Image (cartoon, rainbow over all chains, first blue to last red; front, side):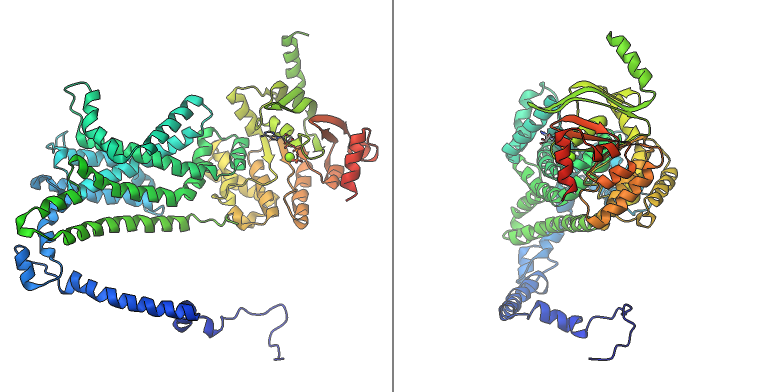
Length: 369
Length: 259
Ligand SMILES: Nc1ncnc2c1ncn2[C@@H]1O[C@H](COP(=O)(O)OP(=O)(O)OP(=O)(O)O)[C@@H](O)[C@H]1O
Ligand SMILES: [Mg+2]
């Protein structure tokens, strides 16, 4: 037995032994911990070796970044022909939004970022002021993009590309969450009328494909409206997308609401909080926190579903891509187009997914036991 | 007696009484849970309610702050009669604190925020004032150093003491306790009971469902025994424990004292 060099009861905190930390320990624990693990590691390295170099070559090393047309690309390189995307980049971004008014799109985008910061980060400076701006933002952006009241009007049929995706996606996200919350609360209501309305609405939405609703928006709705009314197609699409995702959102949030123990509401009631106070201060913060993965999942689904508007003739990025591919100068470059559009969607959706993880961690208060 | 005369009598006697329960019945669907309950609690009185499981103890005290609705009879709390009028219910609830078996702290809020929530939103107390009030009560329950932790980071006994402080922050005139110690490990029971005993010495009206007979002996002015939804027997603690009248009381006492 070694001699004790400390007083019993006052053992100092020591660093862990060196074979527990450091890169070598990490590799041993995570990559080479068992024979099966060693084989998996070798196979994975081999797989990466097969896949990564050709991909990098196609994307960058063998790719052509400039050129007049497809043949010019092929003359210099046999990888990707990014010159095509370069030429069409503005079309992909703005659709057919008039050149001289595109600053309005750019400004809306900058304001979007300004509006998002206070919503996403609770430590943002001037947050309470910022949140007021965030609420006003959809209306400001709507005015900037559509025009009127001093700005020259731009018909919504000229919206297209990523800008259209953002308009539909963000409107859907911004409105489906609050409406979904109301529907979910309504579904649990004690008042039969409210409950029946919410249940039927949710079940109807979930039973019907989005495409059907979009068709209804684009064609059938004009049968129901008084003749001569001019009800903007994009607005109809937005309403349908919002209603559709609200239905899904309501169910996701209902799952969260059901996970809140009855004792929470009883405690709130017993202190004299009113219904809306206990919902807002006690129930929803907890229910929404539990529902974050589902909520973000619905957001991502909605965002990608915006590509369905191609079917009723709106030119989302895929629509622009399809239209560009019919240009004889650039035939056969569909891989580039679809990869480009995929990257755009991937970046947005991956961002949402990361943010949801960040939020879950931040809201963790150690009450899971 | 006409109905009018009865209600004037109610107002007159409610001067002295914190809670009046008169001929009260409650049903869960077909099931008659509470049968003809009559109970007058004078201001400042400490009442311990005991009885076998399922006898309706929780249901009765939950009727007092309208967490459960009664179908017949009257409940008058601090002069306000509990009717379907939401205004009355809210008024009563802000005067009556309740401590639950499972604490029911809000896990997404810190201890401090748990304590200041109701003062800020129900009483409209300014935040700074609510904070210092909360701190005062957290000191009383001897956990001021936990103020910025979340409930999930505290032991059961600490959580229950926070729950008591949270109720006290509304400065209630009546406190209801529903088995406040029965979800706790033995070594934590004492710390919660100590807080309750201290509270009892301060003149607040207390109704406490508990099987802690030691607590009942030290604190209670009256012990009430319920079985099958009825109040079977009530007496001062010494008499209740040493000289129970009813057979069911005897059986119950022999069961809880001999194990
Ligand atoms: N929401 C409810 N619906 C139907 N029956 C109920 C409901 N809540 C309680 N009961 C029944 O009412 C009776 C009284 O319940 P209560 O919770 O008041 O008993 P208790 O005396 O508090 O028992 P314990 O000591 O177990 O807490 C029990 O038989 C119980 O099954
Ligand atoms: Mg009970």
